[in-house]
Length: 153
Image 1 (cartoon, rainbow, N blue to C red):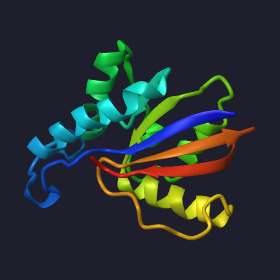
Image 2 (cartoon, rainbow, N blue to C red):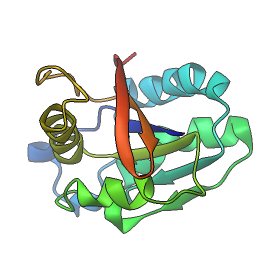
Image 3 (cartoon, rainbow, N blue to C red):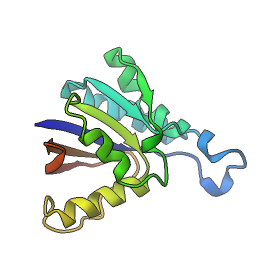
Image 4 (tube, one colour):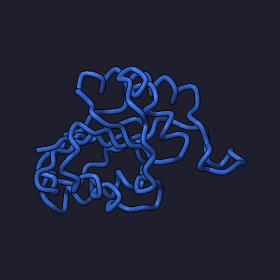
């Protein structure tokens, strides 16, 4: 069995107030604090790899954890906005991965929770995917078999 930590990026500045390329929108002050707190929560989980959407706010969310564990943040387009839940399953299907952090966006987390509900891994759809929160997903043979929620710090 493999475990994945699916992290929704921490708080970023408002999309409507950002005039540049949305892929470069950074975390705000609260988001930077959340990123440090996420590192504190996930550090004891024996993370072996960290993948992130290439969007700046996702990379920044997992940088404190990567620094503390001396791991690289590997950017993965499959985790970018609009890529769908299949982007996550590409990682779930990789039997070489375990204790892996995947930092992504709200739309993918929403689809993940919906999929976990449809697969009856979760008994009911739970609207739990605020910025900075984490879903811990246990995977066996590419299929999720368990999930628990860690609220945003």
